[in-house]
Every structure is written in structure tokens, then in C-alpha cells.
Image (cartoon, rainbow, N blue to C red; front, top):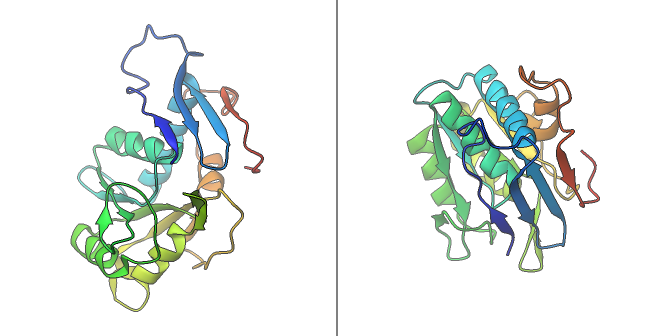
Length: 205
């Protein structure tokens, strides 16, 4: 199971050292990521800007369909910044949408119902994640939930975290890579974004 040390709000304590580690993540495949408070806040600001550009405002919903990973924390803090509602959904092997882990090919109907009820404007998911020794695709689950049900019209943007270079379906105009979207957004506070984010993962961003 991935290990995630959940941070406190990175802008809550102005006296906290900017280069102090705020978030430490260990993945199933051995990759590790460290985020300093400056690095984390930069990512939160960028994510909030991307959400805002997608039409997310106070009270609007963002569905985070991810296991425990840094992007889930970043998306959640970005929602808090916008006073938006974060809806945390993930797949379980018993076919229910839970708040635990993405761990099975089922749960399409439950995820579809979650989208119908919550009507998120943005969904944050991943191409594929390694869990319990198996590579699984949250993006494929999102696509199955949206396909042919009428719920796809309620989701304006699907942001996909690239973790394993896994081939996924793509809907032009709706689907965007998370790292590209954040790279194109403006962080108003930091001149050198990502400088304080380090990773031992071999994936390219």
C-alpha cells in the first residue's frame, strides 16, 4: 500500500520554514516524493488556478478518484482554497465506491451514480497505479462510468495524473494531463516552481 504523510495546510503557519518537508510519499513500486511547504503550496496554487479556469467556484464539486498519492492531497487543498467541495471516490474489489483505494475493475455503476449525484465539474484521476502488485487504471474506470450514460455532459474536465505511461482512452477537449495543465497555470507567488519538489521516481513529468 502507498504511504502518504498528509500535510497540514501549507499556508497556515507563516513561520514554518519554506524548505521544511510538508509531504512524504512512498509508492508501491518504490518511488518516493518529498514536497517542501513552498513546493506544495506552489502546486496547490497551480491546481486551484486550473480548477478555477475549468469553472469551479465556491460550492462546486471536484471528484478526486485516486488512491493515496500526492496529487490527491494537492487537489483537496486546491478545493479548500476555492471553497469548492471535494468528493473523494475510489474503487473497491467488492464493487462499491469507497474512500479507501482503487483496487479493482468493478464499481462502474456506483461511480456513475456518484457522478450523477455530485455532478462534479472536474474529475482528477490517474492513467494507472500499482497497488498490491497489480497495475490498475482509475482513468479506465472513469471512462466506463461516463460512457453512454448521459453523465459525461456534467463533467467538463478530466485531469489525468501520469504515473505509469499506461495507454488510456482520451476525449479531446475534456481530458488533460495533470502535469501539463499545472505547468501551464500561473503561480503568483513563486518564480521558480517545482524547484523544491524532489522525487526518486523515474517517470518524466
